[in-house]
Length: 556
Image (cartoon, rainbow, N blue to C red; front, top):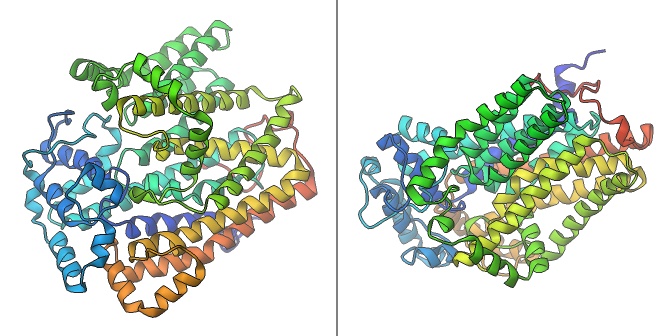
């Protein structure tokens, strides 16, 4: 009997899809102008493409007069002031009288759109060295909406990348879960773990190149697994194109490019793939080579990273690495990958985040138990290799930033870890589905805490932050603050967020309803599958085409 459209909509997968759509719209609307990580400089890159029609050059390409003016008007965090001393912090902005706040907001919204084509002398875009692929979409938005005020243009670009990047991530995550043999009952659980992360939206719902890098990371794992399963020319080309697209989006795909090349060479050496498949993969990967040759010619650095282009070498990086307290830094990086309050870098309750990380580690530990049995499919070994290679690259990047002086030991870039979200969620769910005695309580705990974190993100953290709340966060203190002067709180929020306050309020309330509903639905499906079917052995999960209602839309 085929499910009706209504039943499919209220299925676990349908509820997760609705939950994602609400967040994908809410986060760009709530985020104040330029409070996304490095967002003004990423947007300046896209704007340069739209107005000049050529690639920017690090050390030469300035900001536009429009963006420079907006930086002098929009409130920013105290962290941003370290780099831009002239900005007004959120605390200073909230302390202004209402007429002054509104006047600054009006000045921000009425900046002449014609200034987008005028370079501002004395400014430089420090993101100008980034690969170009992800900037084409926001550049198209900036060009088509050229007559709109800057705030509206940025909001449209955010919505475009949030919806496009999120839709790609959901589809590719579902494909990856199916490729790894996760049963249809567990696939919505994987989607919920990915889409309930605050850092997922902080990464893909701002204008940057990360909106495309995150789903391309999932695509890399998927293409690698499919090439291993069927090492023909078609899958070799797809793997090569995935690597090339990643390299043309973010330089951190370089370690994965080496892993993909090693897999192709190994498959050819073991006579699993013909030479023409290896050549096809190499030709597809080579599409990104001109950009990196350009980096070498312009900056003397193949990767084009600011730090290496500035002369920070391998020896400096190694010396910095030897001085870093890695256990402490690694745990801080894990915490940041779970929750980081945008450019304000506010923190969540360390106890809550630590418990959440412990649940993830326990789920991963369940998967490791299957490794000890010696029956781990090679596909999962590839996933583990991809995770290990990228994690090592993150540690190297942290050491490079410290060597260059652009980061302290504890200030890494937590949005860099988001391409690992989907494969990590798949591994965690594989572990919980196999060690069923642990999985039947780990799954509800993970789902419940994920739902709490995303709801608390809006109601306990970001909305109060942008409305001027400065006291220690607790339900009682927040309730007193809102009840004392609700009109003033909403007025301050209206002067900071990018979208309409009423729409933000409605969407936030909808998320508060959708999050627990989706958590209960995905958890119920997963736990019932454990109770009915028992644990799934690793060797029984090697088929990429399992039957069921929830299947990928089609071949990649």
